[in-house]
Image 1 (cartoon, rainbow, N blue to C red):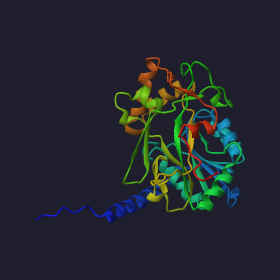
Image 2 (cartoon, rainbow, N blue to C red):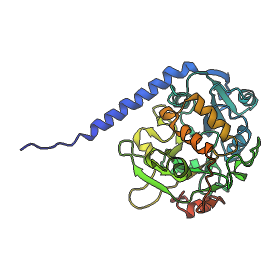
Image 3 (cartoon, one colour):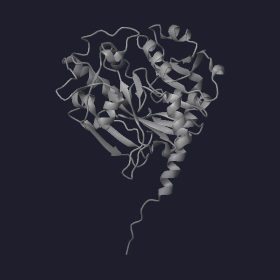
Length: 343
């Protein structure tokens, strides 16, 4: 009788270890592409919460973005600027709590910027809680209106947790995307203050151990013909960093694998947040055209090709089921975030 043997679990553990070492090696090898423009990392103190950001031509977004996270409790920002020509570099140079590097290298060949971020995390993020976000992502979590980010990370430390998840929640306006102009320094959620309260699908990635979330307005409006090709909404943006860690694909998943296991499989709930995604401002029309032309994004810019097709047809993301954003409590009531045992 021939017996069918299951592939040993150890082989997957070995593969993940090799992949993690490969990712760290890539980050080290690509550090030479980064040119230091304003390095103030000597000002970083033990216990500081750090934010790591890759950006290109986001000058109009930066003032509000920085103020938002300063108010939340971020002490220092580390930016990679990918060859901006909109004055971003001059603005960042003037910020006393910002260190930044610039590069003309290919965003796509740097694994969509993650090789650069992994290097900065390895070099400067050790033993710090590190928040890795884009300039259009704004973290909300239970009690964020009364408890700072250091309060959250102190609780995570006391709970023995080294990572904190946040679902990407796409925000959009009531009307057309370009109907109301966005102005520098403005709170973007004065304009994009609607979201999908449901319409999300969750599956488990058994290899990396993370939950894979898709759906929401982008899948509904741009990928209805093939929902599985819609953008991933699961992220783990906040991590107590160790030099042996590495992001695998954006902030969707990390190695080692246990950093992705930020949910309770026994029927309970673990604390989690949302990243309010302010992508769909009036600036998106021009940004989408630029990124489609550059073709520096995943799968030959498939996502931006879908956006362009939708924009050409005059699409609006709002629908009858849309909800207007209020606060984190509303998101908790809808099951989009959880306070877990962080009472």
